[in-house]
Length: 383
View 1 (cartoon, rainbow, N blue to C red):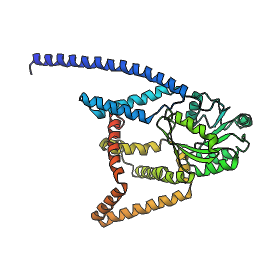
View 2: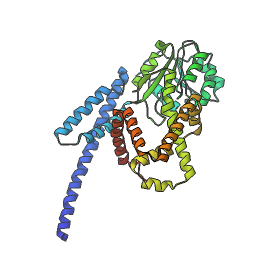
View 3: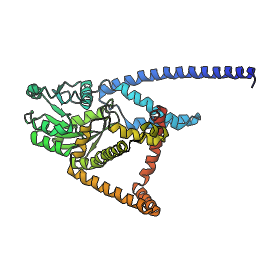
View 4: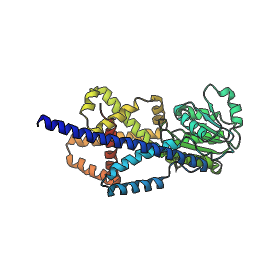
C-alpha cells in the first residue's frame, strides 16, 4: 500500500470516528434527558405509592424497543442489553423518595441498624418518611425509651446473636410489630413468638448489603402472628420494588439447606482443597475459560467475607449435616465409577440427571452465556 493510500484511509477512518464520536455525544444528551424524565416519574410514584418496578411495563418497553430495532436492522439482543442497563439506572434515579404507606407509624427501631444490611433498611424507611431510630449493642440503656413509642422493631443482627437479642424484647408495646431479617427463619420466628405477644413476622431479604435497594429483589416472608397488622410493611416493601415470596419458616429453612448450606459448604471444601494442593492461582486464572474463572471468583468471594456468618448458616441445623453426609456419599459413589473406569455408567447417570433438570438445564445454559458475555464486557473475568 502506497503512502498516499495510507493517508487516504487514515483520513476516512478519522472522519468515520468523528461521526461516531458525535453520535455518542448525542446519545449521552438523550440519556441525560431520559434521566430527567425518569426522576419526574419517581416523584409521581412517590406521591401515589406506585411501586418503582412494574414488570408489565418493563416487558412492554423491551418488546416495543426490540420490534423497532428489528425494523431498522439493529440486533434485538443489543437493544435488550442496552435497555435493561438504562432501565436499571432509571430505577436508581427514581428511588430517592418513596411514599409512606402507613403515616400512623410512630417509630421504627432497627436493632443493628448501623450494620451493613441494617443500613439498607434504615435508608429505605427514612426515604419513605418514617421516624427511624437505631439501637446498637452499647445502646441498651436507652432501649425502653426507644421501644415505648415503637410501632415496628426490626432485628438485624448476626445469626448467632439473634435469638438472645429477641429474648430481650419481651416488653414491647402490644401493637408493635416485631420482625427480623435473619437468613434462617425457624428459630428466630419461634423466639419472636415467645418473646412478644403482638404481631410477628420473619423476613429474609435475598440480597446483600451491596444492593442499592429492593428494586427487583426478593424478600421471603414467613408469617408469624397478626398478618393484618403488618400488611402495611409488606406493601411498603413492594413500593420499594421488592417481590415478596411467602413460605413457612420450615419450608424456608429446608430450601436454604440446598440454596445456602450445601452451596457454601461445597465452596468451603473446594477452597480447602485448593489451599491444600497449593496451585498457582494466577496461572489457573490465566489458563481458564470464562466460566471457570467465574466459578473460581465465586469460591474466592466466599473467603473474602465473614467466617462467623457462614459458620452460623452451616451449623444452624443438625439436619443440614445429614444432607451434607448424603452429598458426601454420592461423591464417593461417583468416584467409584471412575475407579471402575465405567464410562457407560457415567454417561447413563449424566443423562438421567439431565432429564431431572429438564428444560431448566437449557435455560441455565442460555442464561449463563448471557451472564458470561456481560461479565466479559466489563472485563470482570480478566486478570
